[in-house]
Amino acid sequence: MNPPYFHLLINVIPVLGSLSGLLLLGYGLIKSSRKYDRLAYVIFVITTIGTIGTYISGHSALDAIRGSQGISQQALTTHQYIAHGALASMLILGFFSLWALYSSRKDREVSDTLNYIILGAAFVSFAITVSTAMQGVEIRYHDPVEEASSKDNELKFGFKERGIKDLY
Image 1 (cartoon, rainbow, N blue to C red):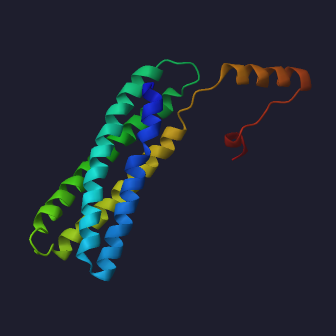
Image 2: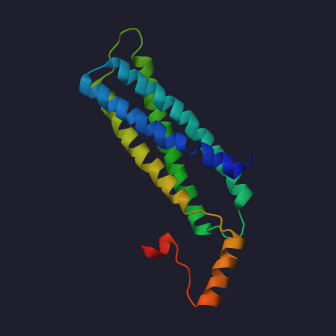
Image 3: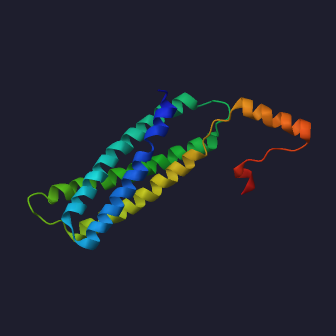
């Protein structure tokens, strides 16, 4: 399995993990249920580990596609910078979640302040990971066969094929 494909395969972990943990923690706070809170903390810790893996695989993917024809270098650089923020926010979320998980052992209550800090960090992490994923969509490999076909159509029929991005 090549590095870009592996990176594309696991890059849903930060987005879906932060969203599911966020929903569980919110539900747990509304229902005052410790079991949902603790499950959310575990999901955030696992998601943080998955985010680290996604970040590391991104470096391998970058090395594999850097300089390839059809790759937007500007989108690649922007994606890389946003990924730094996503990693940092997930590390903070993972740290606070570990702290809350440790604090909640043996029937001890986690303070509402810590829960709301984790909830805020989860919102921020989710927003940044979605932004990172959306920026990653801008990095695409253009198929030379498709580009040649598009140029042939432009020459034969006098029109240029428009992509979805050109319509907006």
